[in-house]
Image (cartoon, rainbow, N blue to C red):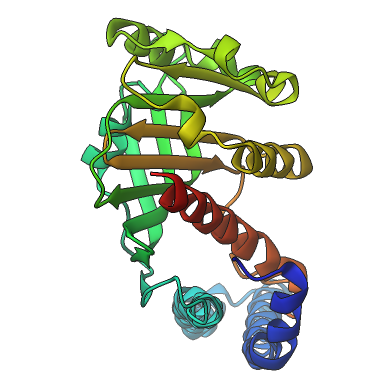
Length: 309
């Protein structure tokens, strides 16, 4: 059973809060140095204007610009180390679950593009595929990997980038022999999934909503499957209830595909999670809560599927 949010809040107070305080001190120090560099730059320009000594001003500005470049480098380093510190603490908390094997984290890693394509959840011509925050591990009989992804397609008409998917993508393998294909797709995204729906139809998957007899769930999701899949065994009532509640509470979209022994899950969001702000405090439970809840949802989905496959 996944830990509750209140349990995570207690862990946050003990383990994550002190680390955020330390990192916030670094943020404030960088901000003070940046403010000082701007003041020095303005003073050099004002001096040049008053004394009409632009050559002297240029010589004064050079070291200030160099200093500002160094601060920019320091800030990039700060951002790069922020996530590994905080994510590592979150994973330590989740590792306490005896059903979860040792979790591994790579801040710069991402799900392989071939796996994303193979899911057939988002059928498009990808012009930009990038990701970060790769996490892998085991849960029960499942092995899994996940990462944040940003996938874009260039519009052939407007020549602008259109979002194909932005969010957290998960791929899992089960060791038990299973058969069939099953897709859950958010219903109100139907107009943006025409190519995916066409691909499913060509593969012989049919609309199987009548077999579920769950009006509330079917208001949120379209369900497609082939003849081999054991629909009611996979879509047990508490599984349907939990993912529907999460989607309604957060406004995020959930996509799921079951391909024989492979599971693909996508949870959309419209921003990069756990990005440290520069001008506001880092010491905030909300800053880490959303990342944790997305991760907890994916692990909960995998936990339920591990029970039923």
